Image (cartoon, rainbow, N blue to C red; front, top):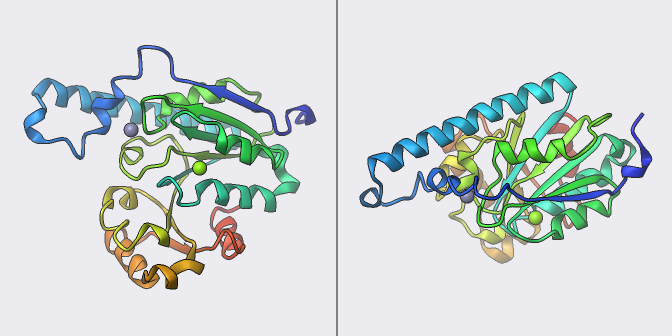
Length: 251
Ligand code: MG
Ligand code: ZN
């Protein structure tokens, strides 16, 4: 039986000293100037991304073995990732003993604190200089808690739409949250993020008119990059579309 005492429990972890700086080679993969990369750098990048991919596969096998469904939630700072997670766990409160949330952030514990108020166990991962979570950090986070009874793992990635795309974590589903307040070009400017995702949540739709953003166009942009991408429109603030997201996640 899950132990009630872990309700709302919060743990903070950080990367191990000295091992994480390689990530910087990996995650500038897509936007480095070619002239600034040497052959050695490129080989390092490849092997590092390959290493992460292997760990992600191991994470996935671990989840499957334990019957855990894992979700990787991505999006810019301010897109509404934490609010969406709060809304999801609030609606799943009968199952909160089954839920573990890992919140990635560069330095703060704001997100884990917010989610922890809903009495689910949270792990804050502070990545320091890194702007993404990787598979090894997820493994380390999982080793820091008792996973007995955990069936749902929600991972909030660090807020940005670029390098987290390069680092699969072993999740079953990647969900990208984009809000209309980010303007009309968010999707076209970050094709890789949408190519590898299964679900796009277009958030803050109640502000579309004020922002003069065409939601249909955002959806077309996304489908052009990834025709099998599922799209759900939400206003987390107004409680719109949350049930559809939960259904799409199979929860
Ligand atoms: Mg957040
Ligand atoms: Zn990064």
